Length: 491
Image 1: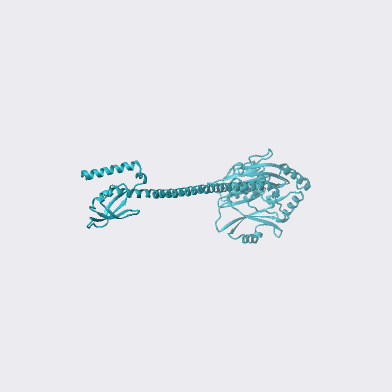
Image 2: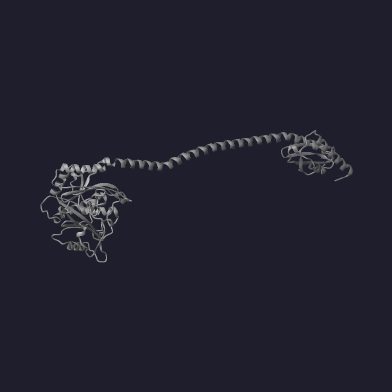
């Protein structure tokens, strides 16, 4: 994901190729690279800066890139690139160590120089060692180019070298390039090589073919990269590729096999010819994928106009707002839904409370009504009870006392025979469980008794009201039955 973000950008690269400037503009995206345009500014060394500067400005304006600061690739013959191995240390200590060894890395003597260095992420060095690529150039050379570009009105953000640009271009396509590999740029009598190999990291060198034959140059590259016959290095050659014969240990491939193949490009663009220029443009578009070793003094570096980021910033802000809205939407909806649920729950709770309250009030009212009905029936039942006692107890029985309470009655008196009284009382509609609560005693008038009886659990509807025809009929039947029993001697 991080590399995909780093591969996003638009840039302009300027390759100083002899007396000409080759300008290439690219747009890099994670899905591929598009060449926006290419132009050649001829004879910039002998022409007025304003003249070729205007030509450069027209080129960028046509592409809508006049806000972009360019990355310039210095000629390899004017720059020294060295690989340096140092123990792992802090950034401040690394800068001091590089400065201490600078004099041994260049042949410029006491001349003022500019230098830059960067760790190389190719290969896997030991944990206690760090590999650095150090780029060195005379300050007069760098300042001369900077003055020319400033006079032409060209905004330059970086002065780089082809090796750093190729390092970046490889990583625009690959997270880890398929090493071993060698990329060569053959121009007239000069051959510049850049290579990577497992355990070796990055390597670069330039050869004067008038002094060093091409075969010897390839042998040196084979040796320095520590290649083996079992794993030949992929070889890509740009420029005059046909002039470089095949060599053992190298397998020639097209530029599209290793470097990003443009998805779109103008007809005047040829990858095999403009490989270095495209690599510089990619370094301008995706600087965080490369060495970021910039020889241009800090005070002279131009930055891309901030207005170029305005559309992106607006889109990002809009995306952030949409993201926040989508993130907050469930919370807001859930909160509103929970609020509605709580309100509905409270409403139903109030209804339930009112129902329970009414139910309780209804129960209380019903209980009071039943109690009133029981009290109303109590009088009639008590009167019925007394009526039955007066009718069932024979006239020979004399009652001294009669007590009526909630549980039943207690009667006390004298009778010639007290035992039959229990049966008379149990057969009544209102009393049951008659028994002697005290022992019988015999007096001159008869047997002295005390009887207790319980109320029958009958409602008022089960007892015929006093004076009704049913009660009279029932009483008549009972009286007749009693007479029959007395007269007939029935049990």
